[in-house]
Image (cartoon, rainbow, N blue to C red; front, side, top):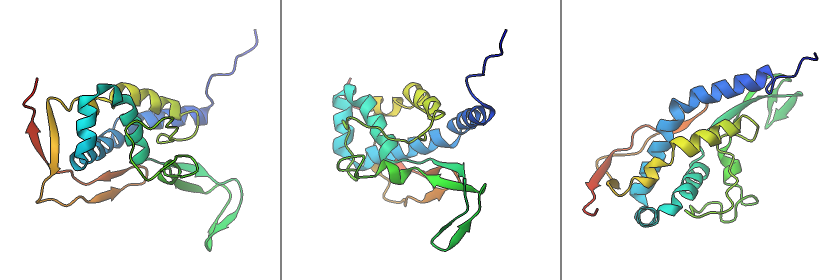
Length: 187
């Protein structure tokens, strides 16, 4: 009987496992920070999401596009030079995905946050096959912050705080998100 090719080669499988590892660590905490910061600073968006729960899925997609936090690595296939910096064939380079998710050729009004943006073909988890795992994780794990605004919600960034950026090798996050929370008075 002929031997079937596995659905993923070793490099793809390694990418999937690495993505799952990262998804359980920095990306969840980072995206929650950006989400709560956005909801605190954009009252109209928070009210709209709370009033219309059908916006939850598109809001999550737009949060991922607008606050694109992931960088990916690639190996160069040829010797190149970029702005005077030599990069040899086989070197690993870090590629931030945020510029692609703000490209005005791909997204009309790319610099604007739109809760109901459609279509929203962001590449927040990467442009390749392993990104499908990120999209699956997002659908099951990340939507709750935008759907939970009725119980309690961030109202304003604390006046005593300053948001600091933490730029890691693969994930960009806020150092802290000090918020003042107001319990909901409605049912």
